[in-house]
Length: 468
Ligand code: F0G
Image (cartoon, rainbow, N blue to C red; front, side, top):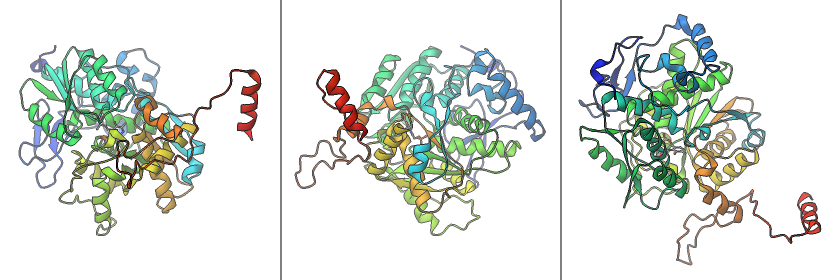
C-alpha cells in the first residue's frame, strides 16, 4: 500500500476539498479524511485547477485515442479522462475497466414518451452492473492512497456490490450496512460473493446511512458513500463520456433517477466543468426523477418553483425528509438524500426539473425499455416515465434531443420483472387487509409465459394466435 506522504505533486496544480455553501466556502487539503465541511457541516466537493480551455481540442483527441490503447488506465472509461481527476499521474489505481458504456437509440421509448428521438446511456453495463463502479474506482483508489484498511458504506444494494468488488481488488476489508429485507437478492448475492462483511440492519436505508457516518469516525475506516467527494469525481466522467458519444453536440435534456442524489450531483459537476473547459458551450438541462413514495427533493422543488425566479441560482434552506419512504424501485427507496444540495444546485443552474412518477408509470416505462431490447432495473426506468411526463407537460419539446441515464442492469432485480409480466407485481405484497388489498400493478405491456403442449403443431398454433 502506498504511503500517503510519498505522494508527488499533482500535475495540474493543487486540488482542494471545498465546502459548497457560499456563506462558508472553506477549503481543505486533499488528503484530509473528511466527508462534510468540518466548519459548517456542509457538503464538500473537489476543486482542482482544470486544464486550460485552449487545450480543449487536444484533450478531445487524446481521450479518443486512449480508447484504442491497452494500458489499464486507458481501458477504463473513468481514468481515460484523468486530466480532470484529482490524482497524480502514477497513482496506483484500483480499476475493473469500468465505464465505456453504450449509448443506445430507443425508438419505442421515444414514441411512448412523445419525443422524436431518445437515447439511453446504459450504466448497467458496468462491471458490477450499475453506475456505482465509475465512482468506486476513484473512491477506493483514494482509500488506498490514504492508507485506509477498511472501507464501509450504507446501501440499497448497488453501492455495496460495487464497493465489495473494488475493495477485494484492492485487498481492503469491506463492511456494508443494508436495510434487512429491502434489497434485492441478486445485489445481496454480489456483496457476499465479493467477500464483504454484510450487516443487515433493522431499519431503512436512511437509518443505515446515519449509522455508517458514525462508524466512519473511526480513523482506520473510510466511508465510500456518495457523500464522499471522491466518488463524485469518478462519476462525473460519465458526463464527459456521454458528450463524447454525442460527438460533442450537447443534448437539450439529460434525465436521471434520484435517490441519494450522488449521481445527479456528479453529472451536474461534469457538465459544468466541461463548459469551463470550453468543451461544450451550454449545459444540458439536468432533470432528476424520483419515485412518488420517496420524493423529498421533488416536493421541495415543486414548492420552490412557485417562488423561483428564472435566473436564480441560490439553494433553499432545507429539505423535509420522508420518514417512511416507499417504492418498489428499492434502489431509490430513500427519504433523506445526503447530496440533495449539490444536486439541486446543478438542476437550478441548468434550468432542469425535479419531478416524481408513480409506481405504475415506472413499471410500464421499464417494460417499454425492455421492448427496445434494453434491460434495466426499476429505478432506472423512472427516467423514461419522467420524460413522458415532462413531454406531456410541454417542458420537453418533441424535437429536442434527450438522453436518459439507465443506472442499473435488469438482472439486478429479476423478481420485479417476473411479477410485472405475470401480473403479480404488488405495491403491498404482504397486505392482509381485504379492504385495501395488495394493490396490484396492471402492467400495460405484460408478457407472461404460456403453457404449451410439447408438439410442433401446438407451438405453431400458438405462434399464429400471438401474431394476430
Ligand atoms: N439507480 C440505481 C440503480 C441505484 O442503485 C441508485 C442508488 C440510484 C439510481 C440513485 O442514485 O443515489 O446517486 O441518486 N443507489 C444507492 C445504493 C443509494 O446504495 O446502491 P443516487
